[in-house]
Length: 410
Image 1 (cartoon, rainbow, N blue to C red):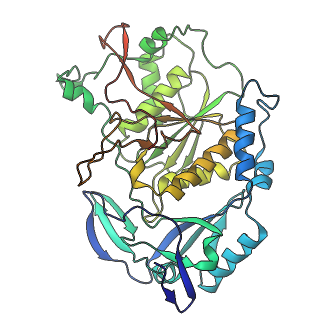
Image 2: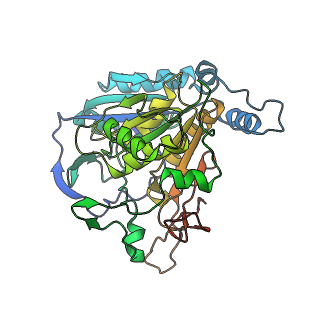
C-alpha cells in the first residue's frame, strides 16, 4: 500500500506475512463501527545496539560486567523512544480520537482502546472482522494496514490486527501415536498416562531431599495462555500425592492476571505442578494471560506485563509458541528486544522447543521448508527440548523425544 490518500503518502509499516485466516476459524462478519478494540503500538526504541552488547557482557561469566543487572529505571533510560517519537505518535493518535491509551514503564509501548471506525481511520487498509473457533472469538483484519509516511520511522508494528491465537496441541498426543496407553480408565478412576512422577524426575537428575530452594529470594514463574488455568486445590492434592520425599510448597504465591473458574487445564496444571516439584520449596507465580481482549495478542500482553513490573520472579517457564512463518520479521525482531530487556534485568526465560520436530511447511512449488517454533528460535531465550525414558515407569536410559523441536530459526 503506497497510495496517496487525503492524509498524504501512506507507507506499509512492515513486511507482514500474507494475512490468511488459519484453518478452523469461521468468518462471522464485519465488526460494527462503534465496537471497541484494543491495539498495541510498538514505538521505535533507542539504544537497541547498546542493549545487545550489554546483554552479552552481563551474561558472559568471563566478562567484568557479568551479573551486573539493570533495574527497570535504568533499562527505561536506555531504550525509551525519543521525544520526537513520543510526541509524533501521540499527536497522531489524538488527532484521530485515539485518546484512551496507556504506556508502560519503559515508554516503548502504547496500549489503546478505540472504536473500530477510529482504528480503521488510523490504519488505512485495515478492515476489522470477527472470527470464531469453538468458544473463542477474535477480531482481526484479513488485509494489511498502512500508516502515514511520517509515522513509519516511529513505529515497529501495531499489535492486535493480524495474528490469530496459536492452538496449543494436546499434551501427550505422542503417547497415543506410539500405541502405549497406560492411562486407560480403570474402574471409573483415571490412571496415570506415564510413570514419570516428581520422585522419578528428581532421582533421574540426582536431586536429594536437600536439593530444594532455601534462600528467600529464590523465585520462579509460569505463563499460561488461551484460557488455560490451574486450581490451587489441585496443586495441594498433587503435592500431597507426590511430594512426600522432599520439602515443597503447596500453593502458588501470586497470580498475575485473571484466573478462570472453570475446569483446570491440563497444560496449566502440568506446568505449575512440575515446576513446583522440581524447583521445590521456591516461591512460584503464575502469569495468567487469558486473551480476554478479543483483538489483543495474549503473548504480547504477557511481555507488556514484564516490561511494566519492577519486581519479578527470576526464572520464567513458558510452554507455548507460534509457527515462525506466521509472524512478521518486525514482530519477531521486536520480541527479541523484549527478551534482551528481560536478560538485562537478570531474568531467565525458558521456552519449550515445540512438539513437531523441525516442523514442515508445505509450499505449492513442492520445495517444502522447515517450520521452527518462535520464540523457541529466539537467541535470547533458553529453549528446552523433551526427553523420555525407554521404559516410562523406570529410571532407565533417557532419549530425545521424537517430537521435540530444534530451536533453530529460518
